[in-house]
Length: 139
Figure 1 (cartoon, rainbow, N blue to C red):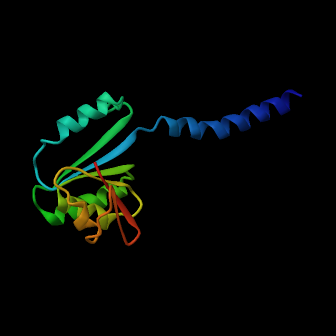
Figure 2: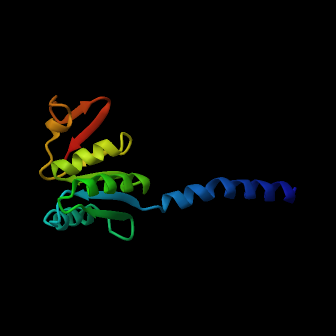
């Protein structure tokens, strides 16, 4: 009888272990900035902390600054996709375009200066815009 109990326990641990490890994974945010300015980051991080998301504990923010270089934006957006971030937050319309071109599966949050109606093929909707099956939301 002990052998069955041991096998049941071992099977339970084998099933529960990946779930426990996954639960400890921090939420990953990709921050894609068209320029070099950091004006948005302090209030953004402050709001995350206010909501209980602490960088280094339960959230990781991958910051990418293109400094006006559109080619770097494309590279950075692709890099965020490869890093499997949970969401991409964009600052500036060019960053939003680069993020939209890089992924159709990762949610994109349009931060300051992004023009959602332009991103969505000039088809504005009340709070969401959709074009070719892709969805973008403004913050």
